[in-house]
Length: 314
View 1 (tube, rainbow, N blue to C red):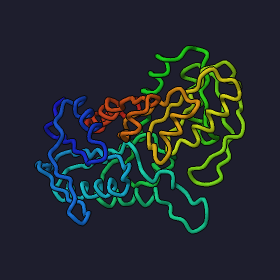
View 2 (view 1 turned 60 degrees about the vertical axis):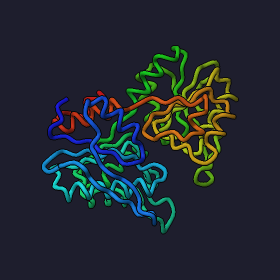
View 3 (view 1 turned 90 degrees about the vertical axis):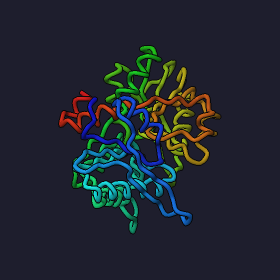
View 4 (view 1 turned 30 degrees about the vertical axis):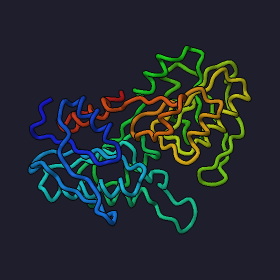
């Protein structure tokens, strides 16, 4: 595509995804220096003339979360002060998204604070993917395009599974997502009744729905410590599932996640490249990565041209 008025830049959180997106767009990655001073302060230098241009900054706010977030904020500020016409923050994985409400007294709503910081820094629009809670879009006072990895994941499931399939939500909160997948795949639907005793600790209690002798796919927006996935897989195995897989958009994979997946009843865990895999995850034979570069690239093209982004998912 012609990119005379369009520039793509990337921070350090996911440069491989940025390169793939630029490959799809047939545009070079914009020149910028994103380093740190000796005391850890982040230094940004933009090496392109972006005056009156459309700038897209690709940066997942993944581990190290705070460094990635500050990189994004400083890059947006640098482009604002360089007189860019419009700045779009492309955040494939939106960190702090699980802190979207007060679950106990005297806690922050961190997802709202992050939205405020991105807006105040100077972003005019946000493109993100599979927000943990859809209402986070309302935390911004600027337009937000919340993309979905569904087209990529559904294409994979159709190719690799037969018709004797059940889509499983690992908790009540994910039922809407699982139902939408099951409908499009003409598959059965099941739900795990889960009790969470503390953050990052879950206990699967019961399976609602028939999974006996079926291939099952557990569907979630992210996999963090993999406690939910492993407990769900055990519950499904006890109910006679023939084989157990999982599909998740965001491979956070913190703490003991990879070891848990390796030792679990899960046959595979399919994720996307919104977050780059750590070396131990790359070495795990059960984890497979699908790229969302074309999907994000198409959203960037449509945003730049003023075309509909929603039609990507119709």
